[in-house]
Image (cartoon, rainbow, N blue to C red):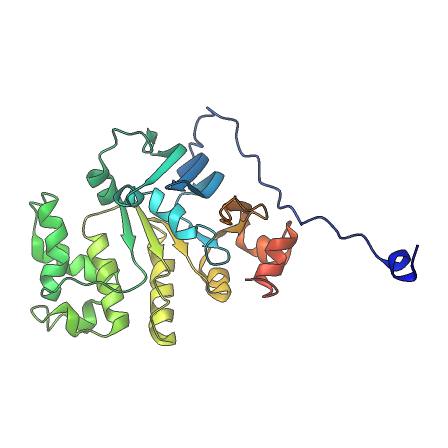
Length: 290
C-alpha cells in the first residue's frame, strides 16, 4: 500500500436531515390550531417540491417560515388558500384543516376560502383605483351591505394608514409610497374580514422605516388574526414571530437533480434561534449556509 493510500481518510456520508414524524396519518387536527397540516406533499409536474409536511399553526400568533431559497416556503404558504391550484401541473397530497374543515379536499370552494384566508404579496399590488375603492372593491364583490365609509375607515385605521390618507381617499392608490401601498394592500385584505393572513415576504421591497411600520402592524393584528409570514430576514423572524418553522432542502436529489423541501424544525422562535435542535437549522440561521 502506498503512503498516500495509507493516509487517506474515509469520506463521510452526506448529512441527513431528520424529518419530524408528525401525527399519524388520519389523526384529527389540533383543535387549538388555526391551521393544521398533515403529511402534505406538493408536486409541480413530476418534481416533488415539498415532502411530508406536518405542522400546526397556533391561533392569534405569528408564525415565520424560514429556510434557503428553493426549499418551498412560498409553495407551502400558497397551499393554505389554494393559490397553487392556479399553477398548471401543481398537485398536492395530504391534509390541510382549517376551522374543522378539510380544505385540501377537491371540492373546496377556493374563492370562499381566499376570503377567509387572505394573502399579502411580496410586491405591493394596489389596484389602479382610488384609495377608497381599493378597500371597497373586495368588500363589494363579497356581498358587503353595511356602511362602506365606515368599513373603509376602519380597515385603513387597522392598517395604520388612515391618518396619512384620510384627506386623499379619492386619489389613486398607485400615488402612495411603497410602504403605504403595502399597508393599503393589508387594509384591503382586512376589509373582507379574514380569519388568517398569509404574508409572502411583505417587507422585502420596503425601506427600513416602512418595514418597521409593517412589523409593528403585524404585532397589533395578531390580537385578532393568525398570521403566517415567509421571510428571508432572520432578524425580522426573531422580531415579529412567536413560532418559527425552518424548511430545508433534502440532501437526496432526484434523477433530474431536483431537491425537495422538508420541515427540519418547528418550535417557539426564541428556542429555535438560541438552541436549534438540527445542525442544518443552526448553520442556516448563523449564515453558514443559505
